[in-house]
Image (cartoon, rainbow, N blue to C red; front, side, top):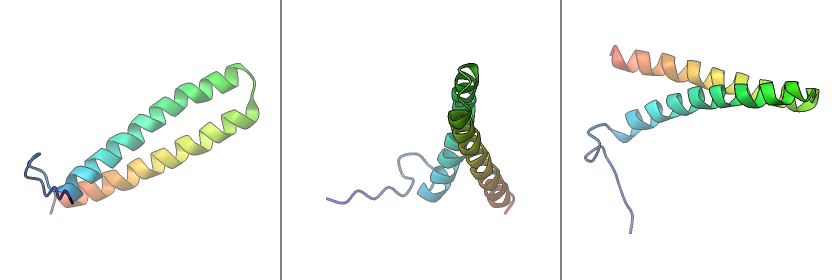
Length: 76
């Protein structure tokens, strides 16, 4: 059985919902990674801190891209 959601349940088309979800996930991840980064720095684990710093940067990039795309779609 294939389930196809087209926005009937949420009132928002899947593609739009997915974009909003992705944006929120990137922002939430960036915040969570800040805690992990601080934990690693407290233990002076430079390698782990750098991993979390890079991951946080990628989450921030994803959020910025999603915000731009969402803004363009809302203004269309």
